[in-house]
Length: 202
Length: 88
Image (tube, rainbow over all chains, first blue to last red; front, side):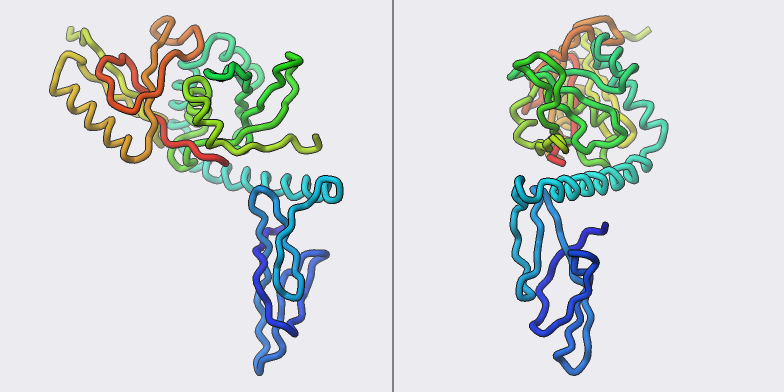
């Protein structure tokens, strides 16, 4: 399902649709028929744009009414982000990735190196709050930090964080190290910058 | 064999993985050059951390110890420069 941005259409225009999504509109009221694409844009937080009298109005999907639709949109949005990031990641040559991996491993504790080798994640403790975070190597940087349950002491993911450097600047493993250092040494600033992603389906 | 007594290291994350700059902390010229490079990256939005490594020469054994620094610290044995992070 592609992403589009809604635009204003003139009164009297006809609209082609794909299900509930307007894909184009044709203005037949002028001497010449002009067909323009209609775009929908879904930025975070999720807002669904709907056409009313050819003027788009945003509304926030209510959890009780549109939970499934919102989950689907969030899922698609994250998929699209991952695809773009994978494309960027492939631009970093193997030598740079190996070098960044060495730097990361040199800054992990033995316990962190063990879980990283085995499971491709490691746990860090927030320098300020002592909150436990799990930084995952998922091949991309979309919401790769799990905020783990504290009170119960289990590993339940309460929500996820997404905060990273410019993907053109550094390879993946440098990104993970940067996240680790920020959480351990400048947690407050990282939490202000990172976006929070709720766990889908939860 | 030349040995740098007051060896200082600055690691800068970049497209190559990272670039390492080493200098003698007792050499004023070298310190000035390192400071200039530090400030150059700062102007570009990089963030700096002074790292205290607790372990052997290859790996740390405890959680990262260090602090964020907003000015060049010539006494820090290791400085890490990280590009600015933003929400995704």
